[in-house]
Image (cartoon, rainbow, N blue to C red; front, side, top):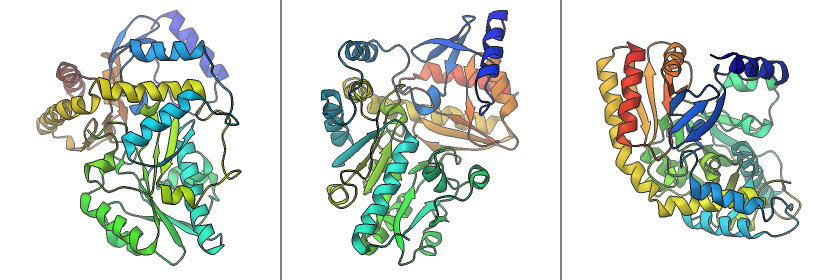
Length: 397
C-alpha cells in the first residue's frame, strides 16, 4: 500500500463515522467487471457494490444518459412532473407487471413506504391502528426504524428498541409458522423471495403459493422485498416471476439505478386506490430527473443487451464451479442461492479467506460470519467465473 492510499484511509477514519469496518483499499475507478484502487491495482469484482452495478462499470450508454440529463435538469421536487420519471415509471410497470409506482432514494425507504401502504390499506378497512405485519426470521429490509422493525435479526434491532411495534416473525419456507402468527389484526405478510443478508435462502414455490392463497383468503397484503434479488439477478426481472406468484406490493432498489441512489415501491391498482393518498407519503429527492434518467436507461439496457438471457446462460456455470469447489474442500458445507445470487457456506468464519482474496485481486463479501456471497455484475462471463474460482481456490487452500 502506497503512502498516498494510507493517507486517504487515515483521513477517512478521522472524518467518517465509524459504522463500517472497511477493507483497507481506496477504490478509484472501474471498467467492466474490474475495479482499480488509487495505486492502480486491478480487482475482479464479485460484489458489484452489493448487487448494485448490474451493467458493470463505465458502461458508455449509461454514462452518456446521466451526462445528458445533468446538462438538462437534475432536480425539481415532486411538486412538478418530469419526463424521466414518467418514462421510468412506464418501463418499470412493464417489467414488473405492477400498476402504481412511488420512487424513493433507497431500498430501506422503499420498504418504509410498503409498510405505510399496508397499514393505510388496513386502516381504511376498519379505522383501527393496531394492525400486525408478519415478517420472516433472518430477513433483512434496511436500517431505518420501520425497515429495521421487520428485519428478522435480533442483533440489528436490539440496540434501537422499541421498534414500531405490532410486528411478528415466522420462518421462511415454514407455512405452519406463518399460520401460527396470523390473527384478526394481521394486515400483511412481508418477505424476500430470496433472502440475501440472511444467508442466500430462496423461498420455495410451495411456500409462496400457500402464503399467496392465505393472503387472498383473508384480504391480507403480500409484500415482496426484491431490493437485492430483483432486477434480473435470479434470471428473472423479479424473483417472484419465476413462479408467477404476484405480490400486492413490491419493493426494489440497488440495480434499479445501477449506482445512482434509486429505489421504488410498486403496488397493484387495488392497493393503489385504497391506501396512500395525497399527503400520506413524500420524498424530496425520490424520482428526481437524474435518478429517474438512470433507472430509465438501466431498464432500456436490460432489454437491449438481453441481460436476463445472459444471466440464465452464465448462472448455471457459476453454480457448477461453486459446486466443484464445495466438493473439493471439506470445510465448505454447501452451495445455495439462485441465479447470480449465490453463497458458499463454510464450517468456520470466512473473513480471513475474503481478506486473502482481496490481496490477490478478487473482491468478495460475506453474508453472516460463515458464508461467502457472490453477487457479481450481471455481465460476467464464464472466463470471469473461472478467474474467480482459481483465486478463491488458492485462498481456501
